[in-house]
Each structure stands twice: as C-alpha cells, then as structure tokens.
Length: 125
Image 1 (cartoon, rainbow, N blue to C red):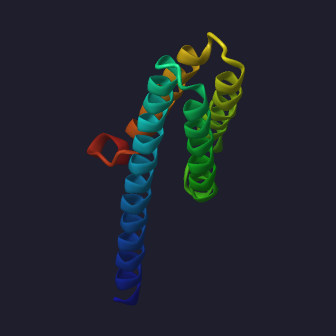
Image 2 (cartoon, rainbow, N blue to C red; image 1 turned 120 degrees about the vertical axis):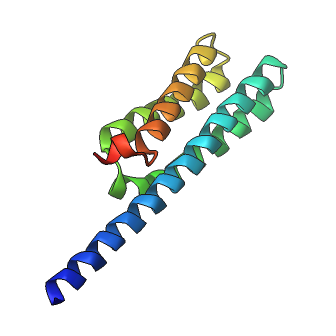
C-alpha cells in the first residue's frame, strides 16, 4: 500500500510540474510574441529609440525566463531563441533591413515552443 501511495504522490507531482511549466512557457512565449510585434510597430513607425528600448526589454525578459526554463525544456530550442533575441537588438540599433525577417523567425520559434509544451493528449502519449 505504501508503494501505491508513493507512486500516486510522484504522479501527482509530475502532473503539477507539467502544468506549471506548460503555463509558464505559454505566458513567456506570448509576451515574447507581443514584444516582437511591438518592436516592429515602433521600428516601422520610425521610432528607432523606442524600438531599441523595447528590444532590450524583450531580451531581458527572455533571459530571465530562460534561467528557469533551462531546467524544464530542451536547451537547443532555447539557444536558438537566445541567438535571435540577441541579434534583434543589434539589428534595431544598426537599422538593418533584416529586422522584419528576424522578428518573423522569432515569432515562429516562440509559437513552435509554445505549441510543443502545450498539454494535450497526443503530447502526453
């Protein structure tokens, strides 16, 4: 009976951690997507200074989330998003034409990470 209780407790703990990590990834990726949209809006409106500040804030928020997420998620996916986030700040600062494509790539990567961590029956099986 003790083994059954211990197994049930471990199962409940794993389910709780899964729900917590899924919701944390969902919130963080949502903020990343909205921040990337905001950077593009500011940049295309001609306000490069505000776009630069927004890109820096976006990178800082992602770095803060990555510290926690590196324990729970695949580091390869997180490293790719890190690379793009760091590049966006540089592209805004230099006024590069590649900014829109990098922001689009970041958006797709965040959506893929978000979809991959969403709790659903196929992802559990």
